[in-house]
Length: 535
Image 1 (cartoon, rainbow, N blue to C red):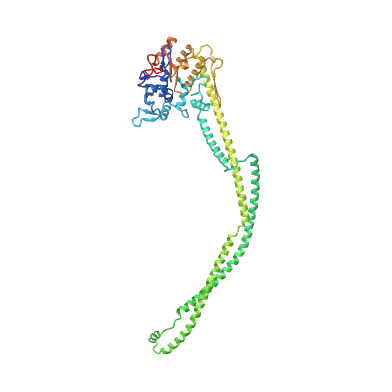
Image 2 (tube, rainbow, N blue to C red):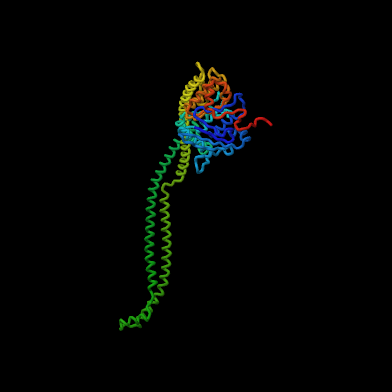
């Protein structure tokens, strides 16, 4: 709980609090503009609120920068913090030695944790803000008691209600699933809008399905034709290939024959030289009886013949080379025919082009039908989840409504004797109504609102209430006395401001004094001075 705040600009620099009732009292003459609401707003500031800076700017203008130190105590452990109006987004964690400055969001998260908010709870400020009813916040309309501000939409109020009652967990999962599904729906819608996919009406869907069947039939016929063509073409081409292959083999054999002739010709040209006289003399060393002169004459005869033959051999070589080159070109041509023949199998271009055209159309139609089916599935899923959300939400809201109405009836009977009319809260999916029933007087309406706040304080993890003087201004004194008694009996904290306490019974006056944390008056202003009167 909040145990203490310290502020050097306050008339009393240290204010201490306890569980149950905590009272800020005003004078018996009911003097205004003494700072009661500003002090309560300072408490809201200590509880991580933002309204003090906005709604009490006159205080800051006249007093200067205000720094508040606040201590919270849980399980006998004190946690101290400091927050200043010149930089309200920063909170100093005074218990921490290293890096004590943290953001206001971290401070709120700490308060949420230390006050032991359950899983899937509301934020700390989301929980307390509607029930910190201080002059200037405009959240004290007894006909709209769940509003944090007058124009707050029910779409914000409803989830906060469910979170306060810890009934938002299952709904959160459904809403997360719905959000993911709606995102898919949005992406698909964008594809339709941009023209990437054609959107089909029911009539167009039927026509597309009929056209798809036609395309299937046409493509099947073309495939059969292609298969028949392929079989016939293969048979024809296989016969043609045998003929071409035979032609190639004959050419290769001819080339082989000519190359052998060319080799022999080259050999004759290379090794056909005549022997000279020196070689004959070497021969005589082995055969002394050889007639060298006669050998030389024979050699001269052969040399003459060789000169005549070489010219013819060179001509024959040139002719053989040309023939071989020509035959090799023919072999290449035949090999190309074989390759083209193989490629030609299964290539009837007209049928292939037609099948590609039909297949493309078939794919487009299939995509259109498939995406229409996806869209239909997504739409159904969104509708299904939305129905589950409504069902779950309606059931939870009904349980909250019943619980609050029973609790409010209990408190109203404590505030008013006899058989008082109890208010009824009605919670639907789209709106809420706070019905004062037959007793709609101003005082009773505010008492009904107090009974609602006390019901939330009792039934939920809401840690505290702040009720400014405006909440009690129209309530009958006897009812206020019983309300204060109920405030004092809670183990949580209730902070209030009240004046003219001498109008109450002695017992109530004692209760107020015993729980008073600050008393203000015309001679004891909250911030030590007044700036309300013109000079």
